[in-house]
Image (cartoon, rainbow, N blue to C red):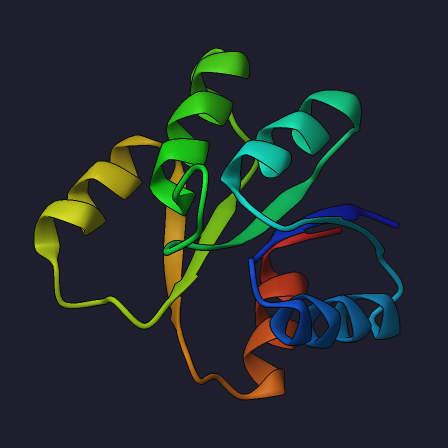
Length: 121
């Protein structure tokens, strides 16, 4: 069983993603913004991060940068969940910070299942 950190300021989105991950048999840690995401990451053994980009306190990108620094450039796989896919500068910065892929909102539940199957044991 792997542990997935879900970071999103939308309670509905967090709960939906949590339910899908738990249904797949994995543990879930939750955070409501990027700063909480960093704090939760530092406390636990995280195998995968699914994070919104546009959040209060720290954006998903800022969180990824901090986690990358904390993990000495070797963060767990990070999937950015966002509606903002058109900005190439954000994509480039995210890739440098450890983001492996983008999941565009709204997404189908099957997309989360595929991510889990591809990235987790």
